Length: 120
Image 1 (spheres, rainbow, N blue to C red):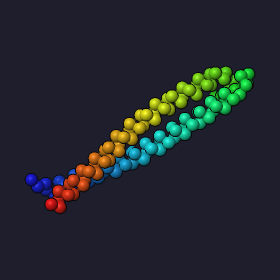
Image 2 (tube, helix red, strand yellow):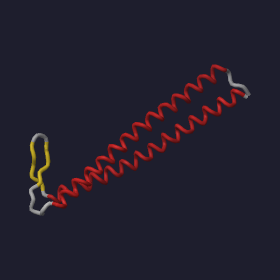
Image 3 (cartoon, one colour):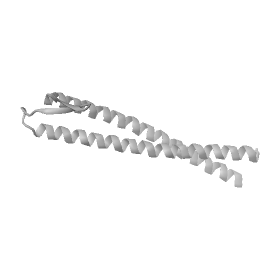
Image 4 (cartoon, rainbow, N blue to C red):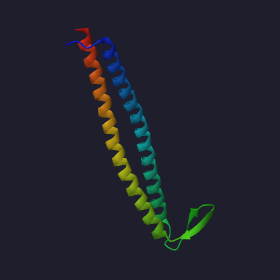
């Protein structure tokens, strides 16, 4: 069974565009994962610095253009919460990256298969 050249070319263009889109999304997802990992490291560093302070130290958080006195334990709770949220976001990004890698791989395999069958 032979596929007409126009249909074959249209199919090749579609598969190639899908592969390129997946490759772009892989780059974007990797950059997002790197940013989240950097955020987690910053949260851990901040938490470590707070744990080294004496318990009666005044801690301030920025709210808009001002700073508000906040209890140290409230800051630690916020840091832990933000860290766990960032970790779950990284997990979701890893799943997204795996999906795009699989899509890219499958698209490339389909292209190779079509090109090999076209030569035969």
